[in-house]
Amino acid sequence: MYDLIVIGTGPGGYHAAIRAAQRGLSVAAIEDDAVGGVCLNTGCIPTKALLHAAAELTRARDAATYGLTFGEPDMDLDKLAGWRDGIVDKLSGGVDGLLRARGIDVHKGRAQFVTADAVEVGGEQLSARQFIIATGSRPAPLDGFDFEHPCILDSTTALQLEDGIPQRFLAIGAGAIGLEFATIMQRFGAEVTVAEAMPDLLAGSDAEMTAYYARLLRRQGIDLQFGTRAVDIEYGSDSVDVHLAGDDGSEQTHTFDRVLVAVGRQPASAGLGLDTIGVECDERGFVAVDDAMRTSVDHIHAIGDVARPPLLAHKAMKEGLVAAANAAGEAQIFDYCNPNVIYSDPEWAAVGMTEAEAEQRGINVRIGRFPLSASGRALTLNDSSGLIKVVGDADSDLLLGVHMVGPNASDLIAEAGLALEMAATVTDLKWTVHPHPTLAEGIMEAAEQLYGEAVHLPPG
Image 1 (cartoon, rainbow, N blue to C red):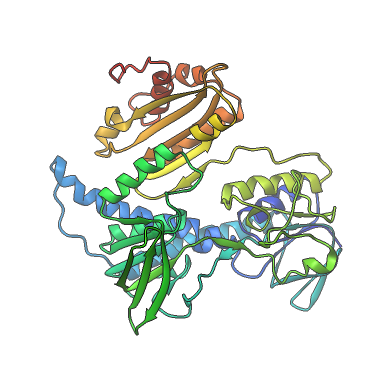
Image 2 (image 1 turned 30 degrees about the vertical axis):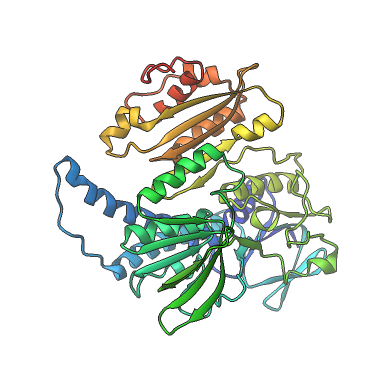
């Protein structure tokens, strides 16, 4: 009998297990694949490794503009894959070591509830006073597109570059997965098309910033097609013909060597036996939870992708800490502001309200902008395509949201997240001393520009 069993060791699960052990609970963790979950093994980490390699190619080519000329790079895909996998193995082993160092028993296999107080794993029954479900998500299918065919990829098989870089690459879906792999393939030399069924990029995000972001991606040569659906496919042995239909009535058929289906992810809640113990799920399979991460069965919690959108590793981590604290008898709720990031090149990041959201709430909105073309640090990086946008309440000066496109946006957005968590004002941002020269100064200057005080921008 454990105090707590955590099902799944992805970012949310291992955070929850370790925090519960820190609180003195006896903890078991169950994992049916590799420790670390999708994010560490086949998602966030290996993808970022390839994005870095792709960015290095671009930087080397662009260096000729400031006098450094390199020869054409020799891409050793096997060595690149080995480097990528070495990072994954090191981190996965590190997480496994952290769990065991805390006295957490790690059981391998698929868990299924047999009662509300016990699960079966590999023929063994484990009991606990409380549970945290952290089973994550899996790629959503698309009718007619067979993942068993070598030309059809999901986010996991798209990582496997050992067979070579495709000449013609289609990403179906312009979310984080589609755009990140579009960046990787384009940088590695593929001709890239992205088909997105929605009329705009990143629905629900700040319209001005996503339009700017789309322009930069197109400028790189990525063919972004909005309001476009993949409606039919014909399979060949080493290529496929995909029929694309536009909302405007246009139709086109193109041949692709590889097609990435990135139309979203679905919660991995099936097969756990949740219906037999009264844990409620919605029509999409997400486990219903309250702000304390409790399910409809009081002693069972759910966190991360399996619980609710947005499907973000860092959101899962914080939810895991909240669930673990509550399992230890504390009283916590999840009330955090989630930054959203796409690690393409350039990066896109946002946290807090968009301009439209604030206006819909009846807030008197004021906007500040700072283009990185006016940033000394961006110019020294030879990477000055970017924009930072600050959304503020004109009446109270309260900071409402920050949105950015440009180099290192994934790191810069953390400052905005802290400011929102602390209920900072726009004036707090503009009076915070930022080191010079840095990209982070752009946040300060955007805040200054909101009040017409940006030093490095002309008036107006």
